[in-house]
Image (cartoon, rainbow, N blue to C red; front, top):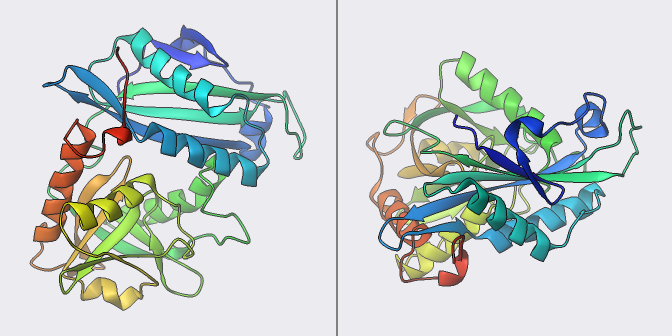
Length: 304
């Protein structure tokens, strides 16, 4: 992965190599951090770089920090300005993956340490997260963590140990990726992305009370299904066996964007290729992120 020349740490632009955290910090020892991951898309026709749904990502960061009891070190206006500033400082005119991490930076702090809090903004040049025509995935034997244990609604470093276990198991078993179920056996999501499936021409996704991250891309696609495709999506509990009889399925997220799923547990999805509704919503998504006519409020320009 490419590296930026500059990062922004605690409000200051610094060289990439100078961003340091002590190995005994509370963040390192106890995963005391929350973060956001955002995409920025370059529009060649408009000669502009747009951060997609920046404000919505920052509001989710604020909610994650509140639940995790990690005080935000700056308000959302400052964090938005810092994000744009560090991208401009690097002079990027290409697609980016932008990480904004807030962490408890106590040197050798205790489990309940809450300050000082540091933050870093890291814009990283990136292409498509998933290559190829689609994914072959497995239902994981690892359950998604629950709201009363380690709430998936919080986008926190600690949550990704659960995702990591599921993803590593899937890869060792010969699959591209995984789907996690709740402890009650219903479908939650992928290791780091929302899951959609299509049955009888209707898109379906797990409800926000199914132990999932409340995805920004998920919300975007729910809107695009209604507005651009005139299709009414369904948010509800999803059974495992519905995955096997789905006409289409795909992962969606900041990294995943819209990525088709070709099989689940070796059951082919549809005819084993990207489905028509998946293709249409993917096209609508890429039109809006790069400066299409709809929803200009979703795109924050980086350059004047």
